[in-house]
Length: 294
Image 1 (cartoon, helix red, strand yellow):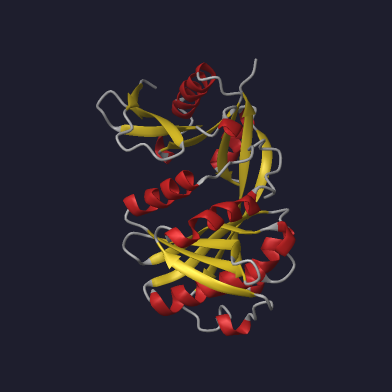
Image 2 (cartoon, one colour):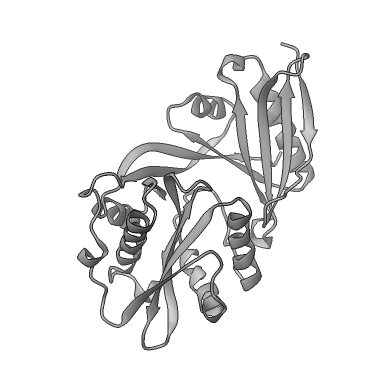
């Protein structure tokens, strides 16, 4: 099959990542597939990149995906990256494609959804009592200035999130990174809702959960990070924060019909929290890893 690859310019680069994009097209200009290479800018992730690869179903098995993958891998090696991560639904054509090209299975993810259209699909916040000595706070959009410093520190709660064999590295958060991530959501027209738990004795945030709603405020919302600092775990704080996020979505966002979340399948604690709150698995996805070292 004859086709050409065109490198595209990233007019609105995302925060914390550089992106390179290729379009595969037929001689008449018909799009056949795309590849988006994410080059992480965090020093702890300078060895790593991520790839999103899509080929139209009618154009598969004609070399388009292989050509896009080859272009992305070459660019990643030129940039000094040692490994590439790509995600595909388990059992999908993408799974077979990546396996055949030497990618290894690094992490399995459990994808789940909470149905908000059923009044009995999730407990009310009052049904999830908060452990004594803590209180919940929440905000929309950017973190309020009064909480920014302690909220930034609380993000270390994600440092030990199970990442399997991805060699993902530890993402170091400072206040600028927090604000940049929040602004990226705002720039897409989406709405970020954060629930945090405060330890009353210190006045410090010790856990958080983030929920992002689509620009039209309808359909499914997407959970982002949820974390509790190690010294405060096993007190039901993650469940209480997520329950409050559910209550808010259900009562304040009536056009949101479901909430989506994804969790490493060996993160038994968070999966148990999700199941207790009514989330049900929809599918499994695999994070594949390819070594780029010769």
